[in-house]
Length: 127
Length: 147
Image (cartoon, rainbow over all chains, first blue to last red; front, side, top):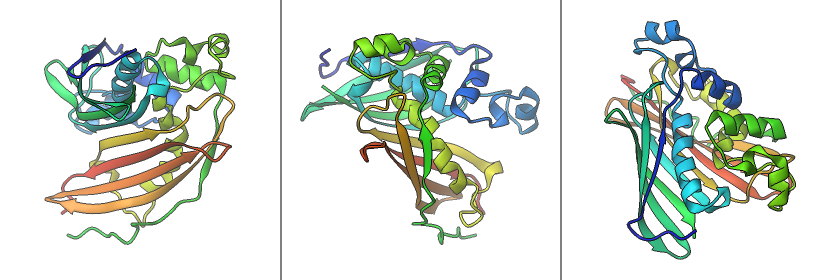
């Protein structure tokens, strides 16, 4: 698969109410803010929130799908902001900023209901 | 209040993680992956791999457990109640395949303060059974209102 400068990548996903439970089991991150509604509210959150690393996995998936497989993704860095919630669509967008030395550099972010929950995503993809 | 930076440079004992086929499938399903390389070992074999391929972000599974002792280390002194996961970076080498054994070593890379916030950066380096570096991770945790 070829990537061109300025090319856009996009992925949409709506996390279902139990995604954090499955992700906790799969990842080993059982922080109760992700799986216990009562605990989350007690610590001042509006309710259970998504794992940031689950959302980062959606950003990674947008890149590997666009680039043609897991071997293409050589680097990904992101900043987490705000809180991801269940039941609201997340849109990952990326733009190929540069092509150089056999790599594409892609800038990305993830938004949910107008809020950026991941920003300053930068990926290197093997061409 | 100044943060203690005495733990910077501290290296923790390596953890080893045996990558299992069903664990890879479970992880891939939990993050919504549909690529058969992750979910179907026959498809992975047909593509030339000995077993299912771990999605790149599976690094969270084999490297995350290596970072945990640093997070809980009193010498690091991270205040959990006020902590958020601020940033994450991974750099990947060769693919991780079910059947691999991954050894990860974590180092306290940086403890610093900016404004009222403390930044705790941990680095994980993961190698497979052939000594190839499969993933390097930078885990940045931010503690608010350290003063």
